[in-house]
Length: 106
Length: 122
Image 1 (spheres, rainbow over the protein chains, first blue to last red):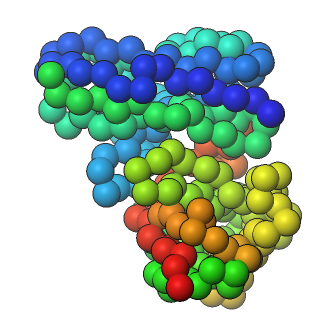
Image 2 (image 1 turned 135 degrees about the vertical axis):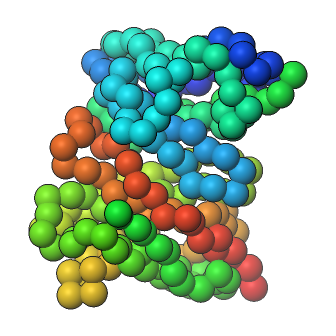
Image 3 (image 1 turned 90 degrees about the vertical axis):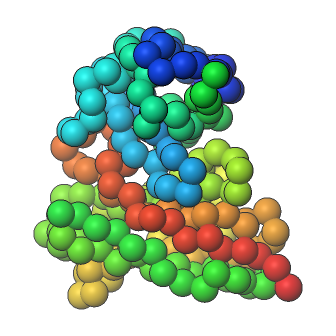
């Protein structure tokens, strides 16, 4: 099985901060990584697919990078509505999600 | 606009079978070529993919649950369903239905239902 190790599990940040979340795959998975945002009581929402492609309607402050085993989700300037939990997901084999990163207000 | 809505009992007894339905509006399941999936999330925990079905009826299951899970599609009602047998308290979760679009690389879930909490308890 391909494991996805997401870090950090939580972080504190301020509005305007640049934030980067990392996912590492246990084996190379090309660009088969997607990123989701989940707010409390809501379903996850797709942000990034195929490692770097911004999903329709997602603000451009969100970006994805990486290939192979190491992937990043970056928020260039954190906005109040961005405080949420973020999940990576590999789609190289059976879908598997990372453990999540909770972004909280500093 | 695509809309997915889960329905089913919110409480299931241990050892029984959990049955959920996802009603799809804004798109026809039978016209293809999308995939449709179930994903769950235990309260306060992460996400776990359960199963995916293609509009043709081809199915794909999480190997860790394959012996207990079944996904099916009813094109006449524009719905797809999940059955999870022999449930225990560990199966208590929010269950989401989602679409995997055909035109995005890999298993990407771009539209989700609001989720339904199912509690397993006697």
